[in-house]
Structure formats: C-alpha cells, structure tokens
Length: 336
Image 1: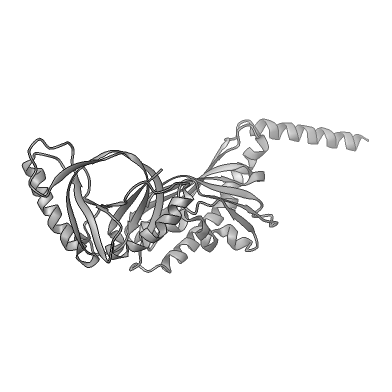
Image 2: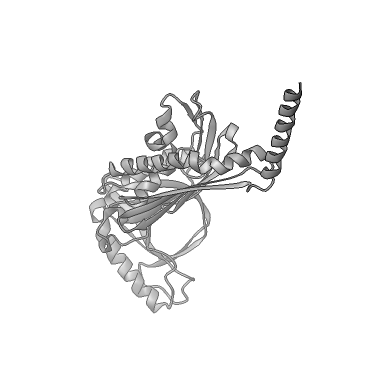
C-alpha cells in the first residue's frame, strides 16, 4: 500500500512540476527551411500556387499516395483550398487554404491539421544567384494548451525534415519545366480608374508588334509636348478578332487629362475602375494565347462573369530581355 501511495504522490508531483514548467514555455512555434532552386521565381511560385500540383511534390502526399483529396473548385491563388483525409498516422486529416498571394513573391496559407491544430504557412520566393531561394515557414500558437507547448519544443525536429523533403521535391519538379515554356497565374483584383492616351489600329496578329512600337513612339512624343507624366506601362485594349484581323486601342497611362488639343488620331480616354481577373503571364508574347484560352475557366472559378473587353499591360519590353520567362505581361479582363 505504501508503494502505491508513494507512486501516486510521485506521479502527482511530477504532473504538477510539468504543469508549472509548461507555464514558462513559449506558446509560439516557428519552423523555417529554405533551398535554392535552379529555376525562375515564376516556375517555383506556380508549382506552389496551383494546389493540384502539390500532389507532385508535397512530402505528405509521398507518405500516403492513397489519401483522399477534395478541392473547393478554385484551383489557384487566394481562396483556393483543399481538404484531405488519410488513415496514415503521419498524415491524418486536415485542410489547406490560400489566404493571400503576390505573384512570384509570396504565398500565405492556413493549414489546419485538425488534431494538431491550425498553423500559418508561408512560401517566399527570392531570385538569387543560381536560381530562386524558396523559403517555407510555419507558425503556430498553442495559447493556453499547455501540453501543446511541449510539442512545440519538438516541432522543428518532427516537421523540419518534411519541409526539407518537400523543398527537394519542389526543386526536382521545377527542373522538369523548360525555360522556353511560359508560366501564368490568375487573381481577382480591383483595378482603379486609369487615364490613358490611345491610338486605334487594326492588323493581322503577326504585325501587332510593329504597330505597337510605332504607336508608343508617337504617344511618348505627345506626352512630352503635353507636359504629361507616364503613369504606368504601355497597354492595349483588344476586341475579339474577326477573320484574323485584330482591332485594338494601344495606349500609355498618364497622370492627368491633357489641356492642349491632341494631334489627329490620338484620343484621351478614362477606363473606369472595376473588378477584373488578372493573368500574370511570363513568357514570349506569342504564347499569350494560352492565357486567353484559360480565362473562361478562371472567371468561372472566381464566381464572376465577363463585363467588358480585355486589355494587356506590357510590364517589360520584350526587346530588352533575353530570357522569355522574364517577359511579363499582365492581362486584365473586367468582370462582375
């Protein structure tokens, strides 16, 4: 009987000691791993941003290839999510949701492991010598869940190796993507009203580049004479082509409405502010047709319908860059 009482006393005091110690343990846990991937930020970003691609590189998908996955209907970007169920004790059940994303720079996520509780994850992409540094972080707060604070002490030991494996898998998948290819991602954005000087033109697709070059040169001359300031990259508003002929307005955003009378053929317009689905496209301009073919699905996934003609913003000058993936075009499609 004395042995039992002694054991109970020891157990009670041990429990009390652990309880007291847990009060002084940190409630917050931070895990971080990084790896330089021999690819552009665009390639690495898209493999993370498109949730269905996680099946190619996620360490937990590799642990249990029979896990059941259910997507919410939005394939990428803010609002995309999926839930998983698995009988494997290292995977379990949970849900992953993208909270915010800035193309080719960062992706912020909420990851709920159910039994393990919620955590915030972040992926950060930084172009560096030799490729792109991808940093994967996870932060959680046990609050007053005192037993969970002890797990927090070991979280880096248990979770860190999975992050390392996932980044290695991500590097392997990135290597399979040709640099001669293109990348794109879609977001829902609120576009402010924009003042633009424009010129109208029509031509076959193969002559658009030459037409744009001449128009932009003329517009820049006018901007200087009108004492205006360029307020954004060159752009073009397109109508649906007919019989292979593209009709468009090529323009340059400006800071204010011009006071002087504009030369013949040049007009001032103001695009109204609106919601738009924006495609962040990286690749040779002649491949932007792939973006337009994806727009109907992207618009539907965001629960919107088209509300106007699309326009393109030429963030980089194709003539000034050598790597096709460094040519960046933003394509906007007004929606409601």
